View 1 (tube, rainbow, N blue to C red):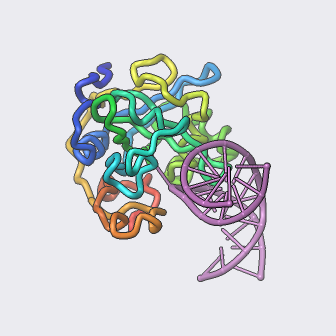
View 2 (cartoon, rainbow, N blue to C red; view 1 turned 90 degrees about the vertical axis):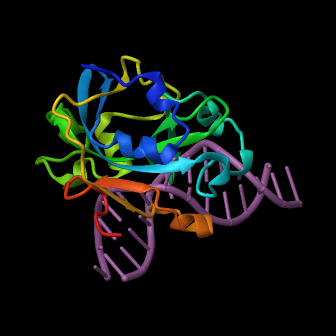
Length: 200
DNA sequence: TTCCCGATTTACT
DNA sequence: GTAAATCGGGAAA
């Protein structure tokens, strides 16, 4: 298995990184359970110039400091007081870009994911959506600012990798970002069932 | 310290 | 389709 190199993450074209992450394998090893799957949906957050990004305008606080690290670490934060959202920090140190992982297609540890999601049967909603995905993989703030080469969370090249057909569209839940909400920074694998909102 | 609100999900009407 | 859940970050005072 080949984990992605630090060079991959330090590309400063964040939408390119977001697209290239589609089809890669994301794994976590939490509470002694290995879980993982194929990344099917991502969104790019383009640092200080992006109104939808937490670091817009150079905002640098306890929470957002993680995004200023060199690419290749996680940025996990709590949203709506309930859901943990997983991002992959990208770009060079000091440039707060990140890619939100919005959905995966489960491959490994499906029983564990079903149990964590309190589901009996596999269905797309198990990991289609950033909050759902984090719950299935056991991701919470404990996994913030972890290197993606760590033994708790990492991303690999897929052995059966095929270049996916990619759909680009607007991001979800960022209406407050005004005109930047129109940027085509959301990407997903066309036709995949494990995508949070195929139409939009 | 106060107040407002969110990169969502789920359960209802 | 609409609303509730739920808490910590960020801005203002």
